[in-house]
Length: 167
Image 1 (cartoon, one colour):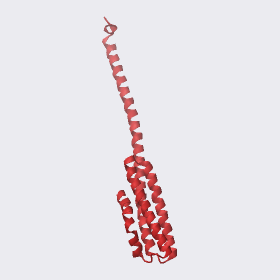
Image 2 (cartoon, rainbow, N blue to C red; image 1 turned 90 degrees about the horizontal axis):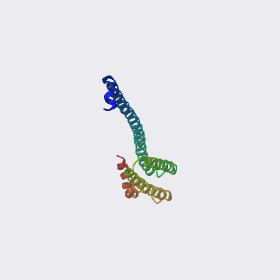
Image 3 (cartoon, rainbow, N blue to C red; image 1 turned 90 degrees about the vertical axis):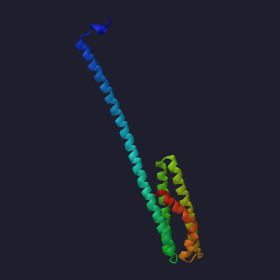
Image 4 (cartoon, rainbow, N blue to C red; image 1 turned 180 degrees about the horizontal axis):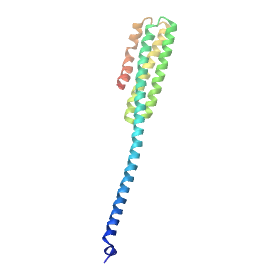
């Protein structure tokens, strides 16, 4: 005979209840721990996604500003002061775009980083083209907006690709 046979039914039921309560308590502790862990992961995900979404919005706005200042640069090429003003505003918009792309690159995974790098490369080609056109305008080699726009044609695909990459 085992010691368990000497225990009364009442004590056996109490032992069973204690075992059941211990199991429930263990399950409750595991659940609380899992919820806390999941909650932290969800908060981190939401913060990262919100930051990335905000940065994407900023990049898209900066790209729009770049394109607008480029057009204003070409349309006002006869006025040296406005030309410099729009070129300066354009350079600021480029710097903001590149900075925001860098911040975005730090937040996203490796597959998105490849796309962001393609956008950054396209913006760099676009920047080189606009700066070359600005130099040609300053030297007097380009005298009208149509000629500037025509010279810009090969680089337009780069900035359009960057803009479409954000859509």
